[in-house]
Image (tube, rainbow over all chains, first blue to last red):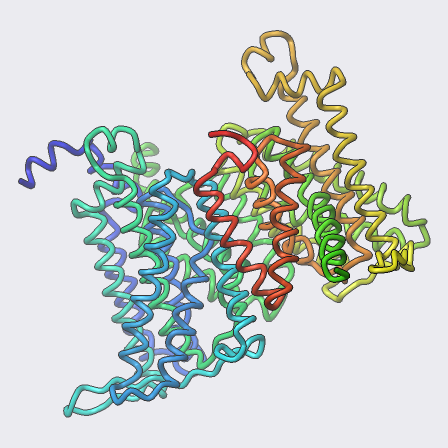
Length: 341
Length: 284
């Protein structure tokens, strides 16, 4: 069966690796070990704030999956992110007998996945072109923001919503509160690592190869009998669920969510992260999200306008000259080295 | 009865303002096929240039002309430096024009500051029609929008330039073989689109407080106007699209909050976009 499928699929196996190539796994190992050891060497504000950036990175991966591996771009990832944060906030306010943290996490996965699946199938089944999809997702994030503003009885409107830190309970075995910085850090990091590993596995499995096939040649994949709209919908639903889940964790970690979290500006910031980090590499997207968000936070306190200006210019340079972003440039390095010596 | 009249008047005025705001986008998207995500920045820049000109004592009419020319020049520079190399890659132009929006917004913040600015209303007062009062300036904007759109339609269908542009849209290769300088035509159309957006930004500025993101209010709505009306249908498409988006927003706002009405209209526009991707005017 598998061999049969392999034969049916056009030769895209190589193309799926056009990001960082074979070195990605090794680099990811190093990156995650550095992240795991970081709290030993630094403490204080960095350890407080880093999990939030890791969750931004997770949202960036959800976009990287779409953009790099399916070739569809969403300008609405922050809409899902905010939806997740609000879901978690509402779950934390409820009293259901079960630990609301788990309900919030589960609901956010479902909410993000269902919203993306419905929107995605609605559009993909009609073969809506990629540029219109960008506009619709842009509208989607505006709608999330508008609903958050207009339904102020539930969401707190412009004032936003406060969310308590969650604590993880293990039946009768005990409870870990994530109120302190270090436990929160070590709760978020594994989630990011598992998400990364899951996405790496999916993109290199049959599913990922079909997605890459769709990216490279939709007509051929249709002719081969694949239902393009179903696969695209699955990818978008997965992406929406991941972004929404990351948002749920972000909401409880930041203790707060406001409508602007789902807005257009934040949604497109994610696109900038992924473009700079490398749209064809999940690690590139993840690190792009973490690093650019860290830099933004640091430089915004010094020179907000000029930093955003420079970021915009870097974005232009990346689109015009380095389509693969930093990850693409890193992947090129060995080849440059070889051609020189 | 009175509410009915006031709703009709409101809907008409909103339709025309929206048509004005979307027209620059309709030109650039409809004629040269660039998904111009920088449209909002063009509008904002037009508004700020108008503010800068009027505060330095230049009369309003002259100020909006300065704004239109200024934004036209910025559009020309953008086209020449970047966009012209990417006409055959709509996805890249989408990202590049968004990058332009990011850069332009920051430049606006650096040059003009982030505070709210107000442009004095050049025509205060209202016309009393018994049942409703129409602010003179808003009525005027409506007339200007109509004049601008029909003027462009005249150029499009009745002049040599119009024939050239239509030839270019219909068949770029053949038009080029017949001696039409396609590169120059694209540049011209892009600059005219930017110019129109600048003019619209200037005209709208007295009705709102000007801030660096003022143009974004119109970005997605302008796109929906163009798509719902039908890409490339400058005259009817823009008006029908604006009527649909602006008019229905007025209607829904009667029953719910303004913000929620916008959400419903977006939802409707997405449904239309799915079932009639070529717009409601055109048969599939």
